Length: 401
Image (cartoon, rainbow, N blue to C red; front, side):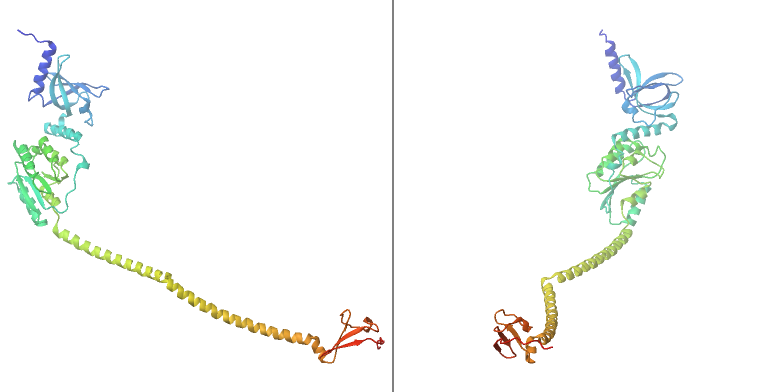
């Protein structure tokens, strides 16, 4: 008989437990005791009920996803797998999600999947795509017998009868629902659709549970085009609603969001056309005013226009210069006549014309004004009105008293 070592035995038992279909994905209800979180971020605790206890561990990666962790004495629902700590040979429960027991098992499963998918980024707002304004073809994933389908078709016929609708039938309730929804979604993905609607009418949390399935959530995440969910009533929120590009409170509202109202669209087009026409007219008027103002500036700045203005200015200056010259000439003539009259009055010739004479000493050339300035024998030049005389002084006559 071959004997196993203790480490071999514990490793073998761990492999058996971690591959078992039941204990590798299990929910356990119990009361928390001896809860402690170490500096590493890992949590160690004990779950117990009236009959037994089991050691529990939650690794840091799982603990960090929780907004709050349980306290000693809390009743909880914990999800995870059963394993063995090989070194000590201790059975332990490796927990990845833990919630208060009062939320119920379905809600606990919902919260566990919600936390896990959120960490993976399936709910990120930045990845959500806008809906096309004028879709040509819309895919609908729902039950062909559902009243919600007829409601959606009626809404689309009323709002936008031109849109084409492709129906990918599926089961929306029961054990087969999750697989059926996934198949129906992937059947639409290769087709040329602009929007996909995943919908069903209202129901209990159990009826809608297939829309909280991880496979369905990942199929919705894989949609190549914007996807709208319209599941249940307005108060119902499922995992696929969080993954979808847009959540509608009901299937009918999903149909309204998917297609435009042609009546409203026509009114918007008419209004846009009127506003566009007004804007164009205003723009044309403004541009005409700019052109007219620019034309005036060009005309005013044109070289020929400036030549015309300068020519007229030269003519005006020439006219003013001629007038000013005439005035100056007349003034000068008047002044000349006055000066001539004064000169004539002061001229010695006028005095000579009255019988007087100018006597100069021939030798010195001085004009004589007194007989004392000459002596007998001096020669004098006597200037008359007409002609000069030379005279010799004979004698000096005494001055008459």
